[in-house]
Image 1 (cartoon, rainbow, N blue to C red):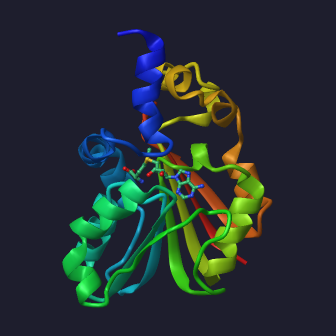
Image 2: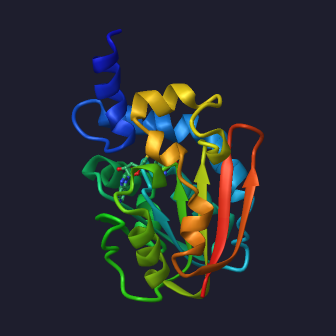
Length: 211
Ligand SMILES: C[S@@+](CC[C@H](N)C(=O)[O-])C[C@H]1O[C@@H](n2cnc3c(N)ncnc32)[C@H](O)[C@@H]1O
């Protein structure tokens, strides 16, 4: 298949839209599962709390977190109408029960008041955010003091886009993200106690707490 067509199809990772968006989102719900499950292992939701999943895509991670505890409330945000639509369908019962709310919008201006959440998660999405420092500060705004920000990427930063993810870096034009030190950016955006973890060469996770 010509590279141009492949790029157009995979632009759905950046912003799912058009006739193939539903299928693409369902595929991401399945294909991202191993990474998501690994990342969610770093979250303790048993005691409850309010979570916001940023760039929630097809909504599978919202569902997983809702299942972790009946005391947890999990909201979602995505700038794609297709993502919001599928996330709402997948989590409809929880929405009806008041345990979830999924909104259309960008991380540039998160449509919730200051200090609304205990946890903010971002799975496979920060690469696409337009202005990392400002967007991370916006995440901090909606977190309560001491709230947790968890970023989970398949792209491992120290490989600079040269590792096993190189195909995706080229296809999705992620060169800038691959060269970016997200740990330093998060630390410089009002977060402390930043720690990072890796899943071999296939996963990178950042945990940081709002100050
Ligand atoms: C690769 S998908 C990941 C979806 C999901 N988190 C997962 O792990 O399967 C990236 C998602 O981030 C969303 N996204 C990209 N830029 C965004 C922004 N500025 N604000 C909110 N969502 C954004 C896209 O619309 C897309 O649904």
